[in-house]
Length: 252
Ligand code: 13P
Image (cartoon, rainbow, N blue to C red; front, side, top):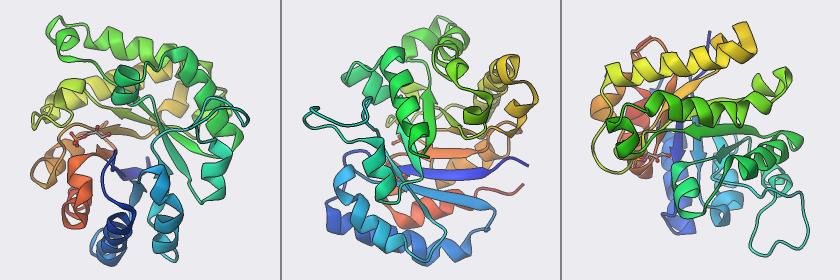
């Protein structure tokens, strides 16, 4: 049985006090959703300590949106994975398309970040996904395959057991344009096959989340697909009610 996960990527949104309110709202309503769903919130770095406090005593888990490629030292403005772990983070999003696109993150950097995450007991939520040109050119399978081969294939079998993948087509992020449930299933199944080519049966246990304009009105249909194990939610994670309603999309 694969884990069912609904993770909120708050991106660069909310002031700290608003983030605490949002987290409290998720905690308050969490009981209305099946306990089989694992909720994760990923606030900005500045909110982590306060949000950790707000989550105390609940099963809602904490994640960060990024971590440094190095362990510590003279890297002004960077935040080490060890610091995130010390604040109670269990997860870290790595390789989000916004990081790849706006901050030039390459597979080389991501390999280092993954190593830092594992060295500090964090589970990476590793993002893959093609842009619109690539989708229209029919290259989406090759794109996600390369993103997996260049990074995930470098993991040990032990590390792979602690990995979450998020498939986020860039053309669906923040655009209101969602992949259809069939499109999601098609590429999720493909991703699982690429994982199985390297890690064998363990690939059947790896949660693969869908991300990109996922909202209460479309979550149930997408999550009903065999190889979709939940969602990485942007905009709709900024309202506790919507975020929780997405969790209710799990009917299997
Ligand atoms: P939206 O849900 O706002 O499209 O964002 C998806 C995303 O990028 C989550 O990481």
